[in-house]
Amino acid sequence: MEFKDYYKALGISKTATQKEVQAAYRKLARKLHPDVNKKPDAEDSFKAINEAYEVLKDPEKRKRYDMLGANWREGERYNPPPGGENMHFDFSNINAGQYSDFFENLFGGGRSYRFEQEMPEWAMRGADQETNIDLTLEEAYHGAKKVLRLQQYERIGSDTAPKTREINVNIPKGVSEGNRIRLSGQGGPGAGGQNGDLYLHVHILPHKIFTLSGNDLEVEIPISPWESVLGTNLDLSTLTGKVNLKIPAGVQSGQKLRLRGKGMPYSKGTAYGDLYAVIKIVVPKIINERERELFKELSRVSNFNPRPAERGV
Image (cartoon, rainbow, N blue to C red; front, side, top):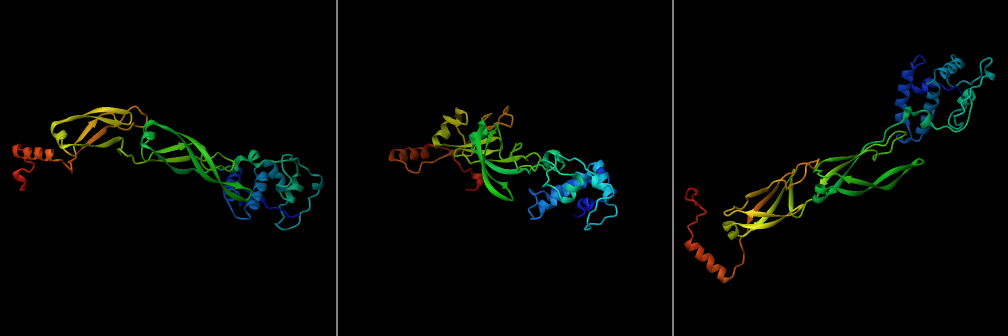
């Protein structure tokens, strides 16, 4: 049975403090854990540092280990010191297959052992993950319940396989383009530790009627030339129903009429942006004879000049 140099396994000296022992182990555990390190020998290396740490973390076990081989070198055969043949320590929570023959002879075997429960120092939190979520304008305005289907990889033995999982998500009222929604514990699985978080990046889809600008909305309102001259009243659809929009006489194309508080809600839903009705004067492309006569009559009697002399036209 070959002597195991536990100090060498952890890369520390025999004079290392308990704090240095723990720090060295944690550093190696994060590097060598099979869920993180995919090299073929990672599992064996991980078991080796576990074995070393199981002894060196405990002052009493460490003292007993040091008694056995101050003059031994790695690779020499182990012979118990005088009286050592009757030495026995009970570690009944250790799985005999978890450690080397050297450990078994030195400290004895036993029944099942769960490393996660007995030595939580190596535990690693899962990685945070990110994905995009598309919302309609109505979903962003009112809030919504969505089901996300995510494809992730899970470990099966030494391999990984894709797995689709569903997550129910409550979208809060008033999320905006570019916001991040945090889903605690829904990210990457932890290695003995907590799962990471999942972050949803909000993207609001284009709307067939409204244009989003921050928390304000814009909607184009086509009107006829005579409506722009005489003014009119229209029923305008908003995200909460119809409202009456008064078009003042003499309104110009491109002019914006503001409806206060009819835009998108802010994050807590206690305040709202505005809705802007953008006027667009539309001229008929096809007219009948009577309409043509009326336009001709208007051109003869009107004193309106859209091109003042100072413009040079």
